[in-house]
Image (cartoon, rainbow, N blue to C red; front, side, top):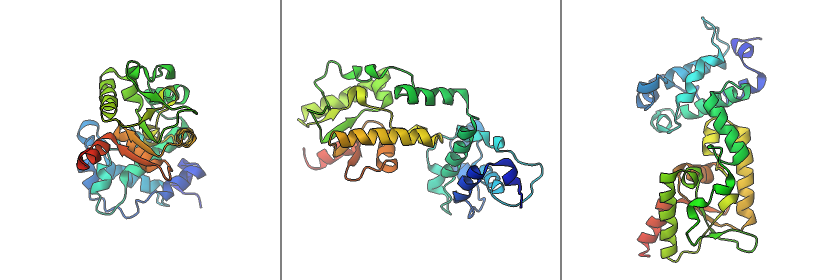
Length: 265
């Protein structure tokens, strides 16, 4: 039987939507009222969940829906507030990321997002800057770089913004200086470091995220890294929750220093 969904969506896309857990949605609106972007952009998570349900159901809707009707998904910051506050554990953010994946596959993506994704694929960062400049923030600091001869159990994963953005570089420098003063043996990847892919995943570009995860995980294993500390909470989320890093501990730098304080170190 041909439904509205089969007319609008390809088979693979329909399968993806049906995997999303939103059939228990009460339409209570708690997600929308909690969303920080709703007052600013009109992103209505409750309505979005309802529209997505129509795509996966045999219902006939008038006027007919189109997948491009959900273009507001690009306004979501994936802050996870809607997931935390949903009384039925619907996970609206996952629905938004799933819809983004469909739009990415169709090439229906805002130009600025396309540019950022292409830069990450080509240069390993969203700014399109050379990877040779990734460790310039540390040029006058005594920081070891990982190599075949110089493997490291503790890695400081700096991230894209702290590596290139002037103000954020001061944070990276402060972390490195503090680690050195404490006598902690650590290393950085330097020019070998790549984007963690957290925002790539959130934007729905699953293919590129898989590439980044595979390349980064290979580096971690190659250099015998057992523990990673990150500058960015986004890198922490990707490495801790998205990657499959069995046997590798991941901490945000605030957690790492808090543990040292608790141990009076």
